[in-house]
Length: 482
Image (cartoon, rainbow, N blue to C red):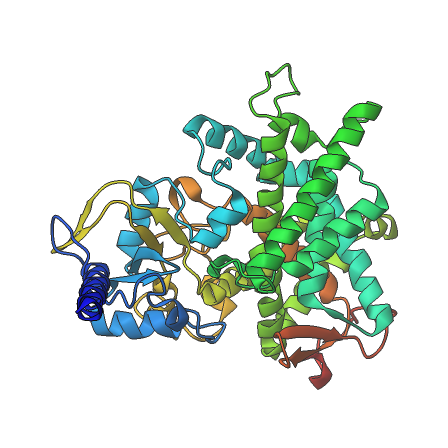
């Protein structure tokens, strides 16, 4: 009799558990909203549609997941990614509107964990305004002209020469080194060689797509990244403490960030400043190396583009005296690279396949018949870049489509590679300058490209003739040049 009661009790308990789980799944898949939610599918709790979203796709195509769902549900749909409720949009008008009216960055858990709950990106508007102002001083056009131009040119030329002597170089690795070495010097001041080397080594633990993976499991990407973050923060902090103890000047950026220049009052703590510098390095290193590698690949696949680039950069070098050649690129040289800017704009258009507008929706928004609910994450994809009504033959790499257009613009209704609104990427001008400098020095060599796809896709530049082969007077491009 007792056994029967125990059996009945367990049956009731299990039934309640099953009912609870079913109710939880039902609520997850059918979220409530005051109005009518956009169509879509939420998948299973927590996992949602994450694995579908993460499927590999062509570098110059929007993710397969986004294209398929947009075809099925329309330009705006709901889903669940990385444990969060998400609205995905391929509508350019909605993307721009959400970028302008929402100011808190939307991010999956992996980003929140890496950046910390109280990082300067999500703190008060005053703190965010301060760090944006300081960053603009460094990476705005005036800061680049006065503080960065020469360093970028020297580092790019040096790494290119080393690669040529060695017979080849990995584009992404090389650009990452140039970027970190350049920023570290301006942000931190002079660093001990061993510390600088260790800081660069840590980036190897940040693979492409680190921002997509939410689960911190020993051995996986997030686990390695968190370990690397701890090491990097330690290096940055020790460097700053040593500089302060010895009376040595830290980098101008660091001093300004703390409010120690121009009689300013300290606005943030040293710890917060170091946290921001880490995030600053992380974001800067995420996109530019990959985009530049893809740009070089696109150039190598288009001999006419290569030929026109060689003409432009041959002219820049030819018009200089020997003394001017040794001094390197000037700001005037950079501004004269008209076709190079056309190539960069076209590359940014065709390689912008990740969401360029990421926000947490802070207020309910009406889009046609649908209600975009507050509290969800908004992901805006730049599908307008591939709209045949805006760009003829949009999948073709055609720099000439930018002829007689404003090449200095970094955002418009039909061009949003750097996002929009209050979160517009502050490193846009820096990225374009680095790309132009790399292309300039690359055009002075004969080279070919090899793509390795064994584990990770790597773009290797091969220099068959060695470092002594400079750009020739004849502007014809031979077949070995790509």
